Image: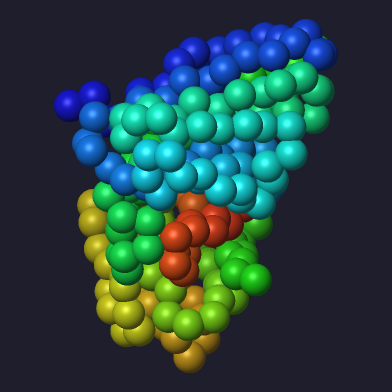
Length: 115
Length: 110
């Protein structure tokens, strides 16, 4: 089972460059989300989607865009990278966004460095 | 808003020692509570969960009890192994959002 697949695993960008982090899941989950992980701050929600065509902002959305054209894919776009976006990014999915006890499945992460 | 507070780390223990990682939360309503574990170089994976007050989640020798009166969900294991070395995250789900604590790095030495 592939589960949640993120690409790339590592990326170095120059300030001002743009890029897209890819996320795909094969579990037919409706709910997908993006988090960033920074030392001492746990995981913070960037954007999430409750189904194809529906996205919403999380806790730290500035500088990031998302779209959800299919159930399987949920790419995260950095429009103009900044050093403050250096972080580890995780994509997660779950079969329901709100049902009590729903488990989230995580990808292996993308380590992004902006220089 | 919702929040999760974990004990500060890192935590270093010898093999077979007793482990407690404290977790307290603030939330409206009746959230579900989770412990996730992150092994080096990997994503987070669910360790255990509890969906209502007084529920006990357990897995791989780890346990945590949902205590509504103290708004806590402390993680415990009676005898840790070197293979338990990882980062542990406490989290709550209220509605569609998961809120995570800061994470606690655990290192177990032989």
